[in-house]
Length: 598
Ligand code: GDP
Ligand code: MG
Image (cartoon, rainbow, N blue to C red):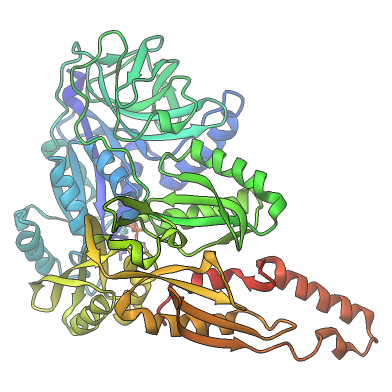
């Protein structure tokens, strides 16, 4: 049977352990193309296909592998995103597989994302094939890492395949292990259709292209299908596989991995993790594990130039077509005018969207400091969720506040344990556990408020440990904290977009830091500007921005016109990312600075 020859697998690894390089080697052996050639070819394909129109993303390629047993196998290599913001997408991509190649760097050993990925693979009951990569390095310690795989992950050390993706060592062993150890898909091709969506992208020519894995049943063009999460129905127009060129097929059946085009207009209608079934003969139960993605981090996006407001809304609407995790709603700030409060999966996701708006849509943005969602229970017993610090009710009407926490795992050499604990403590972390991986490496576990992670935790961790620490986290739920709203006043006026929520114990220090920081960041104005931080009516810190001494043009003695023009242009460029708030010009950096601790 054809199905017995199918092997669906992913590669999982900590960043830089060699996932892309190994994928490259596998592609060379199986499709007679290097990844570079493949990408070139895809670019050609994209030109070629322009009239027909189809976007390709190299994340589920079908490959043919001729095994030493003489048989040819069909491999589907499914790519996974590499950042904790997208952990859910990773878990769904893994759910489309029966096996995973787990790469561990022979010099670095197991790192935080190695473990996080192993947990996801185990959740999805995958066969894990451990590979010790980079054995060519002088610093490689394959035996130590083999022992680590056994002790920390619990896989037999002797199963580890030594390899050098860079030098092409061990690649045949890996491919043969895929054939021998990754189970072939099972399922009934005659059963009602059950296909899982593991990615979904918007194509301007064809609408949404859905990446699916068929778990049960068979799907063909012309059939009516239904998305089980929202009951929306569509008609299948085209199905196929990526080789990496899109290749139309007459059907996709049990074990197949490919694409489906069905006149879907918006990725929100075909969400990752959802189950596709036939409209007329639906499967009884959807695939387990579907959940709607909830944004965890929010910020305000405002156009620098108020007349860009409609363009900004158009940009967000276009991006939303391609990104079901992005949320936005109109918001008004006294200080910044009309804009949007937007929700993101995490900070990286937030940065990607901001950058796309500025680059692809050419809109200059003012972004407010990122915030998490706080649960506020009021003294009258009612409770509200707030994602904008300025919405925090007055202290006397607040009974208690809860905030989201993460379980953070940091892996680090012995020497830096103190530095890591100091940082976690400073970020209001609760110590949970500490385990030695081997004689000189430690896994440290803390529960830390998400709000402390989103800003600069990872950067600080890296610099405090000379880059040796690796880090991963997952959201674990809400906990009560002693939080208060701190307002910032410029020239006596409270600026809503600068309000933040802080822990009461650190409020004074934070207020001081912010007041000093704003003093440095906000340029001198024609008049003196007092900067104050307040909690309720109480001023907790202040600084003063002195008035400008003289007009910058006065220096030119009215002489050199071109020099004068240059100065004016320089001033204008400097103003580009400023917003006049009240009557004070405030630069973009000021809005973000309220979160930094030093
Ligand atoms: P990824 O982040 O897991 O995709 O890692 P990459 O495949 O991008 O590899 C990260 C770095 O390690 C690159 O500079 C690679 O050239 C290098 N690398 C990957 N595999 C090997 C290997 O087997 N030996 C050596 N010496 N370097 C490797
Ligand atoms: Mg890579």
